[in-house]
Image (cartoon, rainbow, N blue to C red):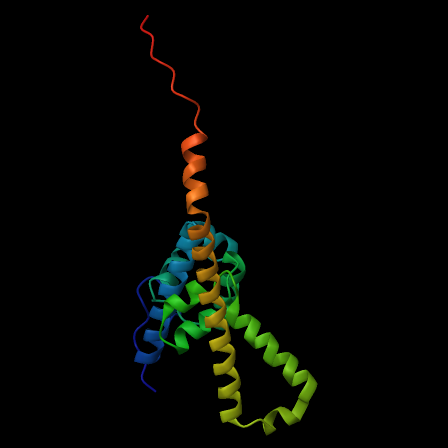
Length: 182
């Protein structure tokens, strides 16, 4: 196993591989995006996580060690989806953590799978991978359609009411009074 030297100023923090470094950079980018979404300062997040500000800054810069515990603390501090933070690393896309921060989409899927496990127990292993892929793909298509229809509904609603909205805005203002000079 290859090791890299510890980042300066972070005692005991040692990167093990190039993949570990990439994971840390991805997590750091996701953390920065979510912190900014929440309009929090690094010091606020660090305090909420119970770690020194410098340690948090190293994490966000991608120079800290990625652990589930740190991701959980960050998720609690920023009220985001801890599972999506892990997904950002797995999918190599920090934006996915940002886009799931409020909806907690990945956590919802994980809970649903946990409930399926509670119902099926060991029979969960009888579901073929292709069946799981088909079910997930079908669900994703339905969610895409839901978002598309929602957007179309809003557009249609605005189009149908555009004339009313325009006429109201013209008549809603009181007549202008002439200016008088003093």
